[in-house]
Length: 270
Image 1 (cartoon, rainbow, N blue to C red):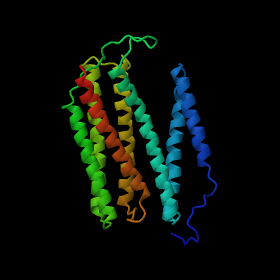
Image 2: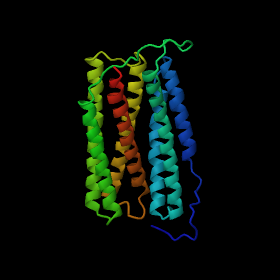
Image 3: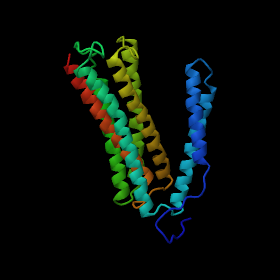
Image 4: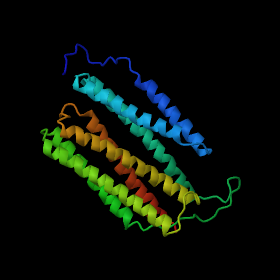
């Protein structure tokens, strides 16, 4: 039930979730280190499960705050700025992998202490097979998200909103399935290997982390689909959906850069 506010700001109540999130993240990281050194994975898995529960509980409280009227226009601006900064951090994350790829593709070194040049080691990938299909799938999913967003903002038409989100989720799952099949073909039939050389490392780290972001974005959109099916979101207040749409379009743009840089431009160096 929304309540009247006499100011534009949201005064947060004391919450246990920041502490629980920190403990869960420490358990997951420390458990992963132990796992890599031969110990059991139980501590890492417990930390991971606690992290997921914290995300669910904390974001549920955020949704409840929105329903209570705490997300005023000023608060929504702050939430938008926060998510924009998060996306900027993601841009820098992927910039590191593009930097590594371009460096090894344009000027590979025989050793890092000399200046002996050697030809770049590029393994050809058929860009116009699975990669092109995945490009079209992501672009179509972005169109579906834009359609859903337009239906919400211009008229609050519920049916296209729900349908657009459902289509985007299905296409996101299809992208993940196609990428998994592509990895299977490269590893099982093309002789590729994880970390075999600089190209393999850059390829799997860049496309793999992008695939991980697609999975996160698909879950993000699925939550928005469930919320919109229940009647959440209005043309004036839909920060959760807006953040999901921004994130999905960011994922689309990163894939376009990956497609043109690794699958097309990289092969042209052969």
